[in-house]
Image 1 (cartoon, helix red, strand yellow):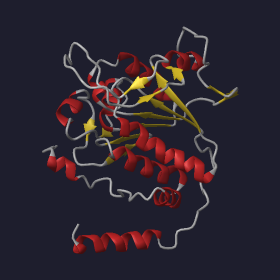
Image 2: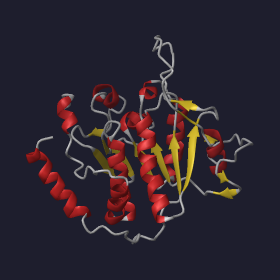
Image 3: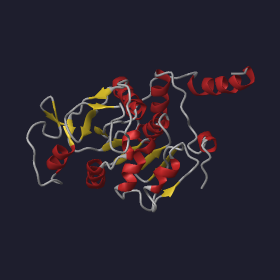
Image 4: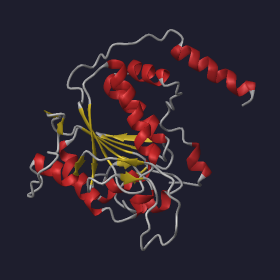
Length: 273
């Protein structure tokens, strides 16, 4: 990076963080406590672990009560490794990561009364014998797996959305929201490299082609992969306060993307309205 480019960035960082001290959370009314992330085979790793690390750090630094559920169709470990399917008849290596669910969709829906089939086992909301309460924030990542039918995931979002306070989608995770119908008539964005396919899943959605992230009411959507981190910081600033988001990002030595409409990747991937 040239010095002429670096100097304005350093000046901006100094202005923002020079006298940084740990702030108080000023918004103390009804802060969300129960977070959940929806996972499926061939999810994008950073779509999941980027936002979760922001929230992990928030919980650790501010010692605020936060619980996490990892939700999937089954209790089997869920991998990022591409799956061999009729649509994807090719051989891949086994390089990837897995995450272990805490609950299935059916368990959560049964607990909330949305599913006629109550299942025994993990109980939907229990954690070390305590009740997490209803899901308040649902995060939906993207990845290659979104190009599959994902009927259980779509149905879960459709049934769960009316009951949550916020839903955050990352990358092509927006296609699960659009297929569930909850983006109809709303503004949203998604991965720019996959723009043509992703936007085809929601013909009634007001897709925003040049945006790092978009907020429309209680639905937040982000562009491709790493944008989920910036969306999460913006959401933390919205709910917990700008100073809190600044402190968390500085603690992670991460430079936040602050302008939601600054999106060079739309041009790189030739995305237009």
